[in-house]
Image (cartoon, rainbow, N blue to C red; front, side):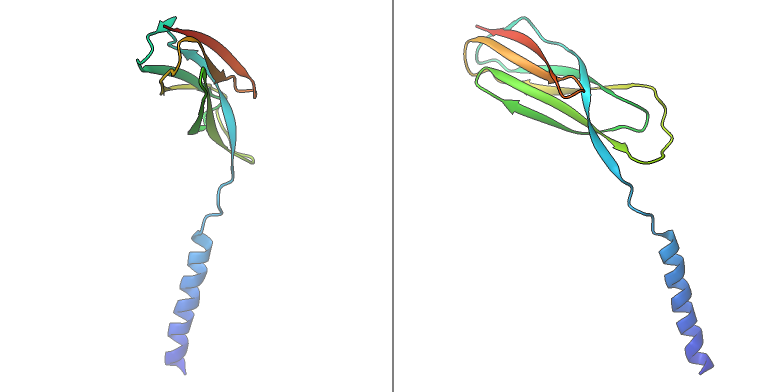
Length: 132
């Protein structure tokens, strides 16, 4: 009987130690970042690609880039950047972090082309580009 109880106690002890070391899943939320600067030219020749650099701000030291959403129209492109932040009582520095990304734009028609970027508050900032 004693020989059987030692392996059983070992199994229960190991299971208990493993259960204590399992970390509870961290909860996060997504927030839109403000795109604060672009390298937008005044004009572009139809058929050329624009590799547009966008600088965005992450609101605090705990934020991390998550994803970019881009929607193309005939005469426009809209880009929003999102960062992931931990929820709950997590200590984070309040220092803004800046990073950049590139968006490729292929205008389809001549004329005025609108480049809309997220302002971090659900709105959009609009720049115009002349396609000739």
